[in-house]
Image (cartoon, rainbow, N blue to C red; front, side, top):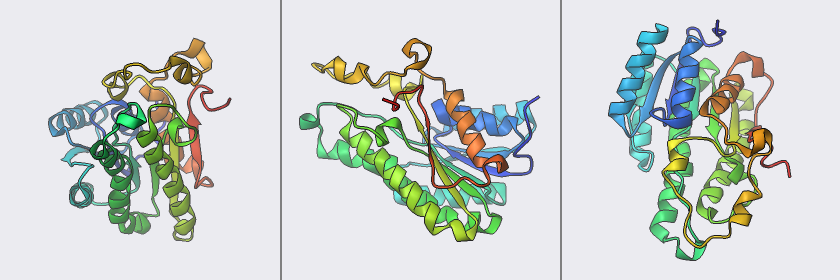
Amino acid sequence: MTAQRFHSKAVLVTGGASGIGKATAERFAAEGADLVVADIEIAKARDIADSLAATYGVKAFAVGFDAAEGESCRRMIDDSVAALGRLDVLCNIAGIMDWDHFAGFSASRWDRMLAINLSSLFHVTQQALPHLIETRGNIVNMASAGGLIGIAYTAAYCAAKAGVVSLTKSLAIEYAAAGIRINAVAPGGIKTPMLTANPTPQNIDMALISRLFPKLHGGALGEPEDIASAVAYLASEEARFITGIVFSVDGGQTAG
């Protein structure tokens, strides 16, 4: 039986309609949390929320939002707290992947990458903090191996995720006295729709990419559930003395 570490807790998972977000929402529901599945794909979010409620007997709601729009991010927090009645855990997982030769990467693609992968955390977290202070809750952000090391052809993505790393550490220091823990998980290569929907650009040097493959299991990609487990641990009371860390879950990708 799965431990019920989040019984009576209210959890918000952004990007919960697919990939790591979906796996994370299921992990929290399996551990007894009431939750909001927030995503731009509201129909998928509703299906997932309904399934989680039916399967695990928890309260689960779907809230639509566009991570590229600050006002939408803030409204999503208000809607989520209204549905749940409180907020104990915020999981900032919504994000996109886009890669190409840096010289051909347009300004609009750069702006969109930073808006969704970094600026959305500013809006969501700022709006959520008063509620988390009230419950002495915590935040788990989704960083990336790309936020810790350079990865060719992904400059915008890496820059945004490096920002997530620094934002996590800075806020962890600032809000420690308020009892708020703020951590991040840094996945390596994971089997998700976000990865498979973004094929490699043409005319790239694969040697620059392949040297960063995971070292475990013959270089196989990880599963979304591997990341969901890490998120749940950091959000739980088992991690009560952990804040400001970036937890690499990458099969040794960033080890060397």
